[in-house]
Every structure is written in C-alpha cells, then in structure tokens.
Length: 350
Image (cartoon, rainbow, N blue to C red):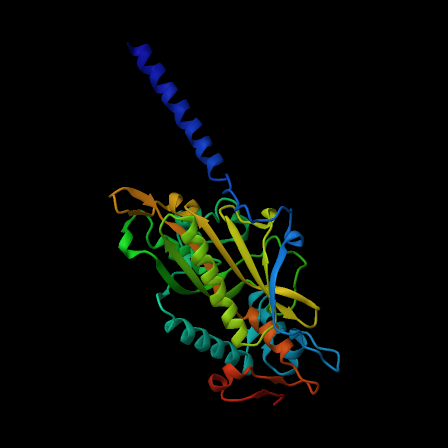
C-alpha cells in the first residue's frame, strides 16, 4: 500500500509538471484570423483599404516635427534625454498647450458620444490582466516591470479589460463601451534605431482608448469594429489630417487579434503615412483568458467578445499636426477645431 501511495504521488507530480508545460504552450497559441485578412509576413504586406484627404503641397522644403518643435520652443529633447534617458522629452509652451488642447478636444467628442462611459484606469497593473489580454508572455521584454512583480501598461486596454475579470455579466448590459484614459509606458525593446528623435516613438505617453465588450457574435464584433474605427477616423477628419486605413496582414497581427486596421496619418517630412491608431477585434480570445462571461437568453454562460481601438495617443499625433500645418516662415497654424482650446490661431517663435 505504501508503494502504491508513493507511485500515485510521483505520478501526480509528473502530471502537474505536464499540465504546467501544456498551459505554458497553450497561452502562446494564436487566434484564427478572419477570412478577409490578407496573407503576409510584415507591415510591408498590409493592404490599403481607403484614403482620406488631399496630401499637402508646399512651395518650400517641409521641416520635420523635430526641427519645427525645437525652432518654436515647443519641446526640449536634449534636456529630456538628460533627465529621462534615451527617448526622453520635455513638452513646453505651445507644445504642452497643444497636447492639452487635443485632450479637451477628444474628451468633448467622446463625452457626448452615445454609449461610451469615460474611465481613468491604472497604469500599474498586475500580471493577470497582461496574460489575459495576450501581452504576456510574448511581449515581456517590451514592458517595464516593478520590483513587486507588477507591470506598467503600454495601453489602457489592459486595465480596462481587467475590470470585469472573473465576472459574469447579463446580456442586457451588452454592449459595454469604455472611453479609457491612462499614462502609458513602453520600453520599445524591438525598435532599436527606429525614430530615435522626436516624439513619434517614446517610452512615456498618454492615450485614450476605446474598449468594447459585446455578445458572442461575429456579426456584432464586425459591427463594433467598424464603428470604433470610424470614430477615430472622424477625429482625424476634424483635425483635417490626411490619412489612410490599412488592413493588417496575418504576419502583422498580435497573438489574439482576429482582424486589425491601422490608421496612418501623413508625415510630409518622410513622404509616407505613419500609424496613429490600431483597431482590433479578438472574439473571445481575451475573455476566455480573463474569464469574462455573460448569461444569454437561455441562461447559458458564454464568453463575451472584446474589441479596442485608439481614440488618440499623445504626443505622437503632434508629429503629423505640426508637419502638415507648417508654414514657409517656420510657424505652425493651429488646426481650426483646436483654436478655441489653444486661444490662438498660429504658433510662432517668441
């Protein structure tokens, strides 16, 4: 009998080790892309689906946002690096005012948008929501980690999705739409040598995020995906920034994404579009991992579907604004929709 107990104990330990390995493998299994997602290996294979706005023409050589912001005393990158290290920055004077104007602009648009609930969410988040949303274990090297084992989030999506973790909702509550705000932090570990100057790719920024939970229906996911994408396009249209929308190829999808659109606004100094928004739906990939369910009409429990899209990330969008609105004398015209928030129409040298 003693021998049997020892054998069972040994086999139980072996089984637990096998289960541990199985779980570690399963969390790395990606979602199944939608049929409309094009084949491809990288963002070079993404497919343009639409464009908006005429590209600006200048009778002078357009400056980069770095030169414009330095010349207009909107930013200090040298002291930013001295204080915060590589990719550090200070926004000052009209650089700071422009960010605050953008914040009030986007808040006004979403506070009045039907169905969205505003929420300020934590930036310091436990490991479980990162695992649930699919950022861990794959993206660990791009996350800042504290000595207590928590992480600094790179998007408000993580904490917002964690809000209903391990909870059961009623179908009558769906869809749930959040307009979430947080400070965001990214190590940019895989971006060595990319965008090393300016505020396009930085370690610390603020972001407004649209997060939607809906019933377990592909049609509902698609409907809300198009809606949150259109919301972000509307903001760029009000800012009169030329942009295009691309559908991301299979090789440019995150682990849990079924389908993703990138919205990219025009950068005159680079003569190319650069990403400002990323809009995705996941079906039940995230909610299974987070155990977020709802009770349908029959009383059965089902996993909700999740979606998210940037509303606006700052200061990144400053890059496109100052470049597209620059003038021959080095000044920058304030976009019309921001002039009442800024209290001026033109940013000039002091």
